[in-house]
Image (tube, rainbow, N blue to C red):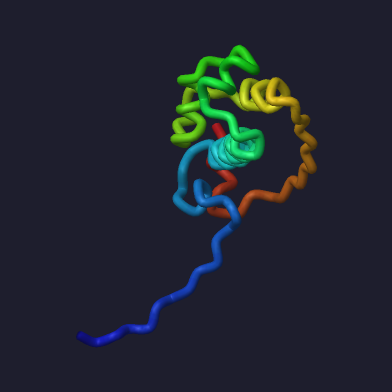
Amino acid sequence: MKQEPLEVIRGSGNVYRDLGQEDADVKQFKALLAAEIIKQLDHDGLTVREAHARTGIAAADFSRIRNADLARFTLDRLVGIINRLGARVEVKLKVKPASRSNQGAIA
């Protein structure tokens, strides 16, 4: 079997954008917020049921977050969950022009 050299392509930092998915920036932001929620649960040693008892957020929602099933969550809801866990969100925003291939993507 002949080994062909692999082409290395640097990612954009957003896997959803690299895969050409719609709403890539929103999906990336949700994933980052979910990771912070999981980090807070792990830091506090909370099970999903204990997190429910502390926050009033359904244990099933924490399970969905742990499983990266984020379709049902809005950004503000994820921020609210972080707040109920006793943490705050600080956002540093950087807006870049869209690449030429993505400029017509927003309808």
